[in-house]
Length: 493
Image (cartoon, rainbow, N blue to C red; front, side, top):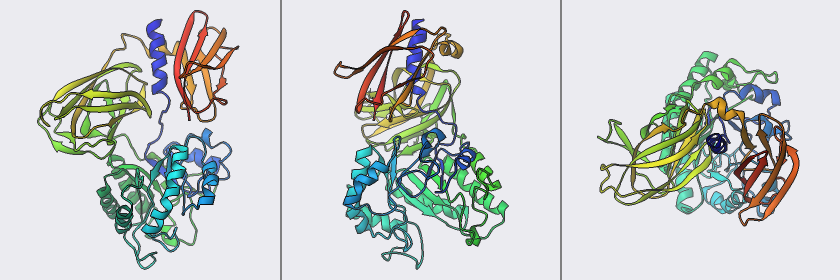
């Protein structure tokens, strides 16, 4: 019983965010109905609409859609507008996209200096909501440019020269090059900034048959899904102006609400799991699904061919796993370094281990094992992220071994303790599943030991709303019923 309860509590943390769609794939579109989003949901995980809040038809209950909305500051936000902009950003937001096509006359019309001057308010907004920042999204153009810049690399170069310390977590880019090879090629040029890429609009403006447009799109998607430097991407678009004849085969959605065109069906069904790694087993470091920084080099260690190298503090690698059995695992990390290193481990967006240390090994191809035990993984598709906190590590693989001791998934499911969502946005639902329904006592304690909430009015097998009146912070939720006592941690953002 103790083993089952222990695993159940730990499994809660790893089950907070489950993915049924490609975590990279999204759509740039601003007029969704609920039926549209339901049609797209099987294949996309996010969308944006060039504004700070969801579409009018979705704004009241967008969280129930299961597709993440990403706010955008289309143009500069004046000092007087910052507070209003912040209020428009809904709970659950994780990113902020900055200025749309600043080097276009019909875009946000910002020179690099204009953007730098306006960036202080982008950082204020992001700090208020704890958001990571995606850069402005210049694109290649000809005479239709603003500020005399038709090359997005020139625009970005000038921006970073003027403001090397501006907070920019990701690089954004739009491309409408004619061929898939050209889209992929110009996207690769943006890798020079050593930050993950968001291609927030891509397509082409070429008159093609439906089959040709689909082939163009699928070639790009296959490349983007297999490129670890691509963090996210979004096709343009759901529906378009019918006068854009050269793009008439681009829309993913039919005129009827909730109906996909053939290209839309293809878009949501292009495979994204070619890098999925089975666990238990070996996670080869050079098979990361997404990354920030890092590189690859040849190695003679353990027949992996290449190890991850050029690691700097703040870099990370993320792996897509297929976990065959939920439960407890031990992981053996393979590192080489000339100085002590540190790293954190996250599972499905939840940090579960911090400041794991790597001893110096005496060389960048002299390897040692670092054991990290007690990592709980849910069954199915899981995202494991390694955040590096020191420079100059080399990283080769992770061997993952189950320690479930015969505890089956169905045994774990007989009794469960879940709180979702966690971190808590406005409020969350606590549910304790039990073989019998019986009185339940709940106590929520802050990090100072003060009791912030107490009730004995609830029962097991009941959905219980918690967290609405909690201030931002970290809390322990204690629950007891019969002879059972359970505890878990929640975060209120």
